[in-house]
Length: 185
Image 1: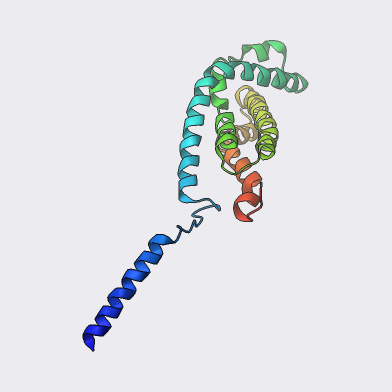
Image 2: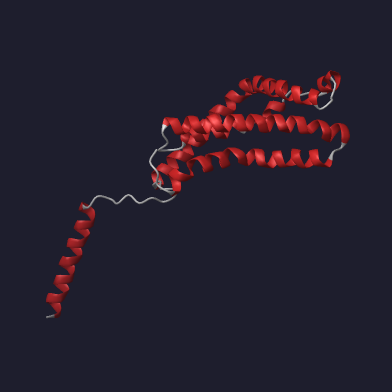
């Protein structure tokens, strides 16, 4: 009797193993409704696109910084700074501080399952927000350095920290419904 039970268990184990092998693999989401492979591909694509965009930023950045400085100049003149004070500030190389556009664009490109419209919305909201942040940062440096303003110091340091996080915050807010509510793109 014991041998028959042993044989039945062995047969049942083989049948179960065969059924598991024959059944298609269930695709469970690991994080944000994405499967493990999608997450790995997203991270690799994000790193690749970021590296390429950072390389391009060395050429694009100086033109971007000129646009930031042109807008900031208007505000600085309205604040009472004279053209010689404004011209005395050396912004050469300052574009490297504004590289946070790179991860924003990389996130818009690399995020899986986003419709092209969602990618454009992310860039359409994110790029102007970051541009305004860069203008505010430049404008806040003037009262900090010319007058030692504590308020300007808080603004400058806050922008330094917040500027790094802002692309990821924009990405998270705009992708929240897609990731957590399962909304279709």
